[in-house]
Image 1 (cartoon, rainbow, N blue to C red):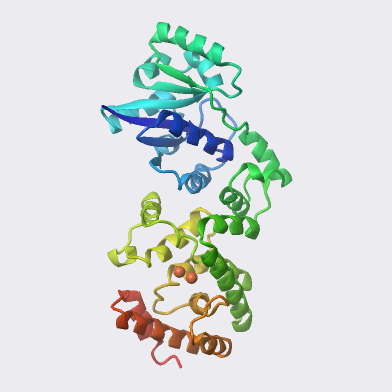
Image 2: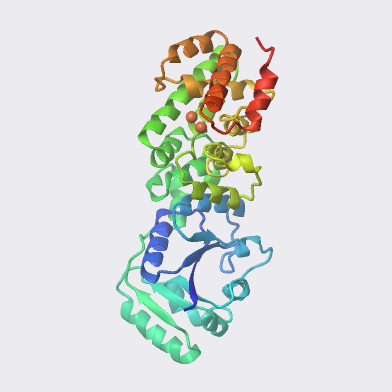
Amino acid sequence: MKTKIGIFGGTFDPIHKGHLKALDNFIKRVSPEKTLVIPAGIPPHKSESATPIEDRINMLRAAVRGFDNVEICLYEAEKQEKCYSVDTLRYLHETYPDCDFVMFVGSDMLMSFDRWYKAEEIAKMTSLAVFSRNGDDIEALKGKIEELKEKICLNAEVFTDEPTEISSTEIREAVQKGTALDLILPETEAYIKSKGLYGAEKTFDKDSVLEVLKTRLTPKRFAHVLGVAETAENYAKLYGTDPAKAEIAGLLHDCTKDYSYKIQLKILEDYGVQTRLEDRKEPIIHSITAPISAKYDFGIDDEEILNALRYHTTGRAEMTLLDKIIYVADFTEPTRNYSDVNFYREKAENNLDEALFLGMKWIIRDKIDNDKFLHPDSIKMFNSLLGIL
Ligand SMILES: [Fe+2]
Ligand SMILES: [Fe+2]
């Protein structure tokens, strides 16, 4: 039997819960081995300028990351000129020879199918899974399918699941008014606000970030990141750097830690991030994927914050003040309860470098004593801190 590949295209401007429900229905009902989600570059039927494709892709990646066997296909997004379904299907047939394709379409798209560009060729290259929007047009859809079957040999099946009735236009208007954001995922909301898309005020939206972290992290880890954020903010005030940045870095430093190893690797692959082999080891990999997630899921562009996330596990030579703050807050925050924690907390409040140096030695010693992998950046950190006190 040929491998069945699902095609789920759209403008995704932005991706919303209606799309996700429809994608889920499509996968459940059609059971493709793999589904390609294909964001449109410049949609042929729309002339108004859409949100930059990079932003639509970033929101899309974060929203579908949890789906198994779903990949984002950038063929249409990367094409500089207008792209028709027939072009995409020709490309897919070349890329995935000997596969069967099933394309998700809404009922309105089916009713106008014979007016699609090169409809007859499309019908040869894919079958359609037609999802009725309101359920009362099933008979009309079946009639249309019979007609298209006779006329151009189209193979299509109708499904009665109803995708949630949400439109992207409705969401864009709601974002402008600051209402109805329960139609999108908190990830999407956090991203929209951090980039100021759709007329939203450009800001780091702590509430939506916390909503995301609550779903991504175990309750214990969630409490830990809140603790690190609060502690880092205090150290920033104490040692003279930006408390807001320290809080953001604290909140996001473990934002990918509870993802499976498979998802961590997928994040590296999705964003084309090359790493050294030692960076892919657990648990170090979460400090490589955290800044990627912070940047592409939460719209954080500040290099100082991204570096503090990047080096919070291993440390590095020549650490910045924010690097040090996150490294130390990680082992002194209020939910830590190891026996010497108060000793380190006191040190941290009086001399951050001393707390950093002692904490690092303790962490390195623990790795040696327990035969755990010692990352080369930690050795560089050790050497660079010699003589700091
Ligand atoms: Fe961590
Ligand atoms: Fe942590």
